[in-house]
Structures are given as C-alpha cells and as structure tokens.
Length: 186
Image (cartoon, rainbow, N blue to C red; front, side):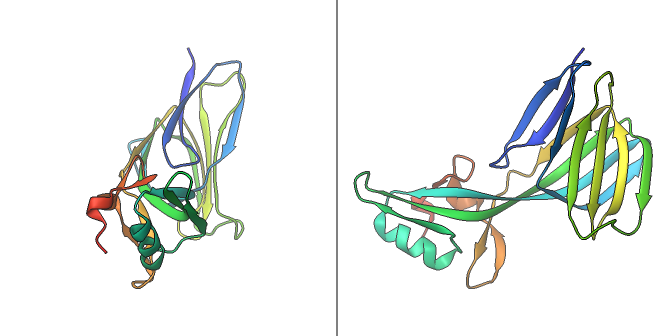
C-alpha cells in the first residue's frame, strides 16, 4: 500500500503524492513553522509559506494602481493581449497535522540560522521523517505515518502604505492569479 504525502507546490497549492514501499522521497519545503502542539502522538503545527506568483489584470488603469498599492517584483502591460501582469511576493498559511508521531526530538535552539522543513520517506519504510529547524520552533525531528495540510485559503500581499502583508482574498481569484477587478477600487 503506497504512503500518501501531502506537500505544498510552487504556487502554495497542496499536492498529494503516492510513494510506494520500495520508493524513496525527499524534498525541502518553503514552509516556516511558527507554533506547534504535540498531544497523544498527534502534532499540529501552524505554518506560513512564501512564494512568488503573478496577478493578471485586464483593466490598464487598475493595473497601474495595483502596483502603487502593493509591492510588485516585476511585470508590465502586454498591449497585444490587452492585459497586464505583476509578479509578486505572496504568503499563505494554515495548519499541518502529523498523525502517529514517533521518536519526537526537540532542541529548544535551532541547529543553524537556516530555516528547514524537510519531508523524507526512505525505501522499505512506511514512515515519513520530518525535520524542522527555525528560530521560533527550534530544531525538531520526528517520524509519522500521515500528514495533512489544512490551508487557510488566504493569500497575503505586501501593502506598501501599511508596510505589512494583508489578506487579499477579497480581491483575488484563481488561487491568487487573477484580480477581481470589480472588488479593487481605484
């Protein structure tokens, strides 16, 4: 029976992988654990995930205003298609549930300044190995039999004037790839 791994893809969508008993898997995720709670062999952790992604806009005036309100990395107006695109730094968050946790080890201090969230599945094993390292959680290692990501379905954009990330779900559609132009006021 294959082991099912859930991970975060490049645009913060949750992907499911089936990894067989004879298969090997290892991936470092761009996930930051900022709290966790372990009870009865179930570890629940809060996470944030940072990623770059585009926002497509069809109204030229709103396209220009959008870059004045939110921090953008690159982009422009594509006259042929009569639409614009801004590449942006985005964030999302949620909870991860790790079930049947075994061999939980915690060091209050992180092992390095590097932020780590790694998922490993060795050949001939039915366990998922997790390593977490950051300044908030410290250094955690453990094994589990199942992991479930529960995303908040919020997408945060950096607001220039407020100088912080704000929830922008009310103005974004298609997992944050498109602007709901009727909700974005000039």
